[in-house]
Image (cartoon, rainbow over all chains, first blue to last red):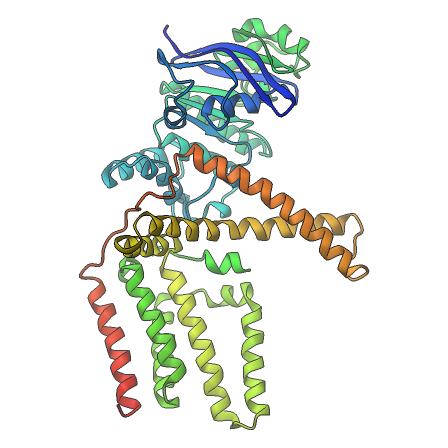
Amino acid sequence: MQDLLSVENLSLKLGDRRILSSVSFTLERGDFAVLCGRNGAGKSQLLRALKGLIQPDSGRIVLDGVDLTKNRRERLKRMALVFQDAQLQFVGETVEKDIAFGPLNLGWSREEVESVREEVIAVMELDKVRRQRPASLSGGEKRRLTIAGVLAMRPDIIFLDEPFSALDYPSTRLVLSSLVRLHQEGHTILVVSHEVEKFLRHTTKVLIMNSGHMCGQYRPEESLDELRRADVYVPSLPLEDFSWLQA
Amino acid sequence: MAAGMIFHTRDLDRWIDRCHPLSKLALLLVYCIAVNIASPVYALVLSLALAAACTVRRIPLAQYVHDGPVFAVLAVFIMASELLQGSGIFISTVETLRFAMSLLASLAFIDCTSIDDLASALGRLLHPVLGRHACSFASAVQLTLSMIPMIFDTAMNISQARKARGASFLRHPVRSTGELTVSLVSQLLDGVSDRADALIARSYDPYRLQNVQGPGAGDIPLLAILAAITGGLLWTSGL
């Protein structure tokens, strides 16, 4: 399969601190990848650099065969990032308005915006709360709204930073099933998470980072020992059981 | 409290919800001026009309009173000060009513008008004069208002965290105020920086002219009400 995203030797320094050191990896179209590593490994900053919120010092970011390292605007448009803190991302007064915010910024017509909004509301199962204020939603609904907000911009890739943080079991399952459905529909997804046991079975690729370096990219079935070596909690279970959707 | 009251729009998709935000703003301004300068009898008529409109709309008044008890206290203050001035019970009641009706009209306005739509409409209105600065003005209004819940939440979290660790505001009020302010500003700056990233991530452009539906036939009854209130005011004041 053709690489959708190719990251080559990406390096980033913030002040005196080296955050990323020659990070390289690839994502194929339709991949559902998980990026693991200890706190401070540089995972969140890598997502921000890819998205275009921080400009890397060196390296290349190639999307669909086109070098977008210098084209921040295009990266902002074509790669979506769901931040760890859902609350900070809400801009619209209601769920509907928040979803429409991104497409309106892209200058789409009213008809296009309404069409994509309805589609995303259906996919993320937000119909019952469409007229509510984002702040009044439950944790799981908030997280699904943040995903809906970026999904509405029809990105090539969706990055999610710790999508299960502070969610209870039912909400985690709801968000997880939404992600699995998006993957089945052909979306390319990269999730930063410490909780691989919740969804490793559904992923197609595992990336492991340590101290700003990419240790490697593995198929899920060959990643278990590597994850343990990287101090990521991995229960002693067969890979088929690594999913919270099974219970 | 303020966050709850400002962001209380209920889009019920009725006639008034579909009217242009600036028509509703004009009606609110005219109503508040009229109810505050009208004769007591006309002020009473205007009050009854608004009360009837709010009843039909089923404004969640109990919730507003719960969210903003300070306004109830203010009303009591006005009544008491009028009585102390020797204005008599009728005049005191009318003066309190003027205040209460201005407040109720504002709540009714917020109930049916999205602040986002109002800011966008203001931006579009001012655009021919101020150009792209009108758009940035509208964006500034929207963003500032969207920050209010964050400010309240942050202040509440800091205050509770301090209490949980045994800090007492009353014991050291000056020192506590300083510490609270430093924590609040520092956390808000972090929050604002993250919010800015989130906006950039969704291709936000403060200079973009936002789409707002223009005034339509639905605004005619609203403008007729505005004219009727003005006419009534002129007639009752003998002009």
